[in-house]
Length: 332
Length: 290
Image (cartoon, rainbow over all chains, first blue to last red):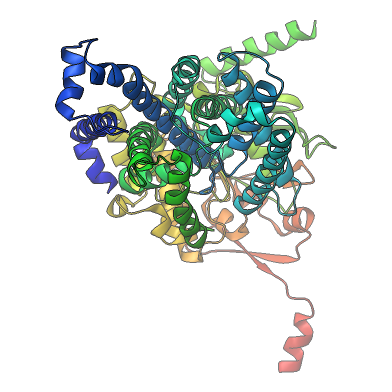
């Protein structure tokens, strides 16, 4: 499979980008009112402010599709980095407590205490993700047998449940300010989130840049610290860089769309199945595949029970949970 | 003062190395530990170039710790490891990796990684973000796979191979790194005797035919005696004996270093020493049999 990937890599990237464009166009045309693809293309080539559909496309639908691309790429790459560096097939921002930590920090600091504007949300999310990750790792490492995939997932489940309970408590105390956060907490791309997204975008781009730059060294690190050192990898520096990338990517995704479960788990596994284990391929392909996956999941969220729209996070959870079960059976 | 003194020594060793009077790898007063009392203390050693040096010793003697310090995986608490005249712990790690390769004990291949991909990892220190893969890299990988005799598995996942085949793939990876110095930590442990012989044969060829300097931590005494050009015998973090096997692989040293009661014979074919452990009460057994 990877030999195949080597020969067809450039055309394959072109095909993937074309698929991304198609998914993007489809995503934009779907909604409360289906807009034909022709009108979508027209809105870009011959924008007319007096045409209602054009305004809807430019102001509502395109931002939402762009956010789907950003969030899907961010979560998938974060998951790929975590799986590669920790040699843990079950590593994922959701399973290891990063999503819960980030959501908790945003809910409490921004929602409950009302601190900061849109620009502060990614910062809170990053702090929460970092604290969540460190807490889960700290619990797992002190368990008998240390930080194995199993103890990490258990610690992640405990921390997620605990933080979820605290969020519910805050909700009971202050119902009004939580009405807006309630939907966000299930993971959603709906609503006007352009401002938050613009604040989160630099975080995504920084995380992706670090991930792409470090990709070459991740395969070496996956062979163990000693072997990586022997190959000339500065292990400590690399681990810090990867941790930064994972936190930045997770935080930007949570800030915009809330905790979307299982995206970071599913996509890297699918990608590795096709392109092999060299992270120079795994990182960019995870970004592409994650973006396409999120567009399709968000289309499904709006079509399955139309005209009622369900949360995108419910779709990713429904699709991701069986993959998680399969991974536990096959790999643990 | 101390700083100036150390720099003086360094400058001296650099010169000695350039003039060709010093070895590529020299240990000077090296102490290594894990925070507690040092595991290796004040150790001096010069590694012969173009030869295979085997480090042997009982479990817990510090032989793997010493190798890790040489490979800069562990820091030294005192002294220095000089790689071509310059202290290895203070050189950029990538620059060191262009001169010295390490095969750690029991390495794990990432799941699904193919043999060629694994061997290609050896080219890592020679690549940069801008220069990712060159003809030179492809040549080194092919040569390493041929030398280690793994070319026929090139497109198979490493995990699907047998223990001996897998170990040869790892050796191919460090060969592809194309360094004058190779450090290997117990590369033959858990392998069948025939595979051990195969692996050691490969390593001695690399040392003798390509003039590379190999330091190998070994568990099997007879395998070490049969293949090593020099043996370093360690006990309690210090060197007890060092030299060619014909000189140091003696009954007295085996007893002193390993507390092993053994007879040392000489293989009439190769002239290499072989040890035969003495079974307690063997005389009584023989008498009973008669």
